[in-house]
Amino acid sequence: MVTGVGLIGCGAIGREIARAVEAGEAGEARLVCVFDQADGLAESLAGGLRGEVQATDEIRRFLAAPWLDLVVECASPDAVREHAEAALSAGKDLLVMSSGALADPALAERLAGLAAQKGIRLIVPSGALGGIDAIRAARGSLEAVTLTTTKPPRGLAGAPGFAEWEGRAISEPTVVFDGPAVEAVKLFPANVNVAATLSLAGLGARDTRVRVVADPGAALNVHEVEAVGSLGALRFRMELRPHERNPKTSFLAIASAIEAIRTACTRGVRVGS
Ligand SMILES: NC(=O)c1ccc[n+]([C@@H]2O[C@H](COP(=O)([O-])OP(=O)(O)OC[C@H]3O[C@@H](n4cnc5c(N)ncnc54)[C@H](O)[C@@H]3O)[C@@H](O)[C@H]2O)c1
Image (cartoon, rainbow, N blue to C red):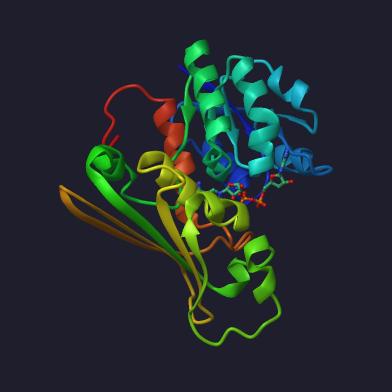
């Protein structure tokens, strides 16, 4: 059965998802509408596609689009705060890429409650992180979870937590943040969705430790996860190529979004989740 997909956000991730859906890489998904707050961006994305896709900068028109089943948020944490409730209330399944917004327990609980009440799905893909399945399975026996994210300074530019380093010469790997995930997602909102996703799967945002390292020699975005508990230790290391349109986003995050859409739209075998 075909699933109608709508995108909130037509940036690096949104464009790649649109391309993949059109190329048939996301199973039975069909793109029906796109929405972006930036002037003309939704129209320009829809205009470059072969199929007929409704473009709008108005959320009400977006959610009223015919055949819309699954809303894919790939915009910003603000977009989750502004539009997630409306999407779920309209009875649409919702896939959230800006998982940093869900580090706010009140919002996460409200959205999860709404999805349960409506009998629909709130999906948080593993994004730029691997091993989320193992962390989730081991959750009950974990004692400590640490995420160390290493990026080139340009990949951290613009984040509030990086403001004091902006314009300063960083000549060697430098820890620019070390603290709980709940703080990290506020100070590095565009960079540490991984921290929020890891927190949701494991010990929560207050008890997950995050370190952010600026490394001028780093050509790749590196995420290292260490989880320790009574079952032993889990260690994962991701070395990820940044997307050329948006160096804050890794190709794996985009691939994970496409795979999550494919899974949501496909019946049958599911491996690893
Ligand atoms: N879960 C993960 O592991 C992971 C990995 C990478 C990126 N992300 C997140 O996914 C999101 C999209 O990433 P991207 O690289 O495509 O970003 P991008 O900046 O390239 O594109 C985002 C687009 O969304 C639009 N937008 C932003 N806020 C909006 C709002 N409130 N309403 C409507 N449109 C809005 C912008 O105008 C822009 O066109 C970001 O929040 C990013 O942090 C998550």
